[in-house]
Length: 210
Image 1 (cartoon, one colour):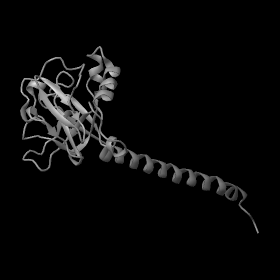
Image 2 (cartoon, one colour):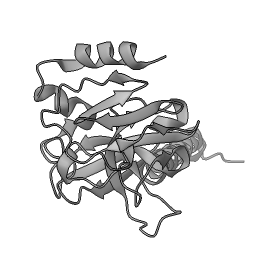
Image 3 (cartoon, rainbow, N blue to C red):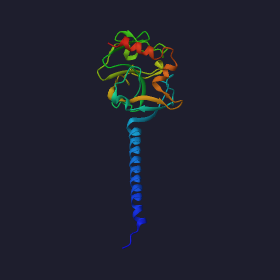
Image 4 (spheres, rainbow, N blue to C red):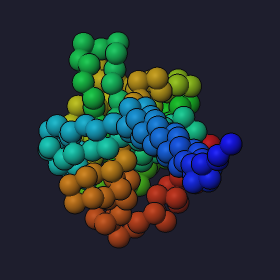
């Protein structure tokens, strides 16, 4: 009986190659699955329409939404959010800044925002509010409601007006995370235009929270 020693010696090598290819295919499938999940469930693109968020965001700025942000943490004051109100006539994405948090009392008086009776200091806003809208009278936010304003306070439809009003948590799509043109993290943009920076915002948080 004759043996083909060359063929027998190649079997472990061929088997090793096959195993390596299978592992490589599995790794590719995993990477593609993770990428698909991130693109479709964690991140989304949108475009800023209009001038209501100037000077933080300008018309036609390209925005990446972090849809996972509020799965692990609650929205904070001064977060810039993207929301879509399914119970309103309009169904488009809207971008505004959170001013009032659940349970707080909001009022706009003499051009200034009051939260629980205290004036809110906003180092990145220099122009007083001319139209108080619904907030001319004190507004008490429910446990799942947020009061939002555009940074361009005198050219913005926001929680001061009935067509937007208070935002429900369930209507929040996610945090406006990155501006892709000129690549900036959106919640840091106002710090570039403000001498107060983060320390001023933290001081405000301590002042207005009960």
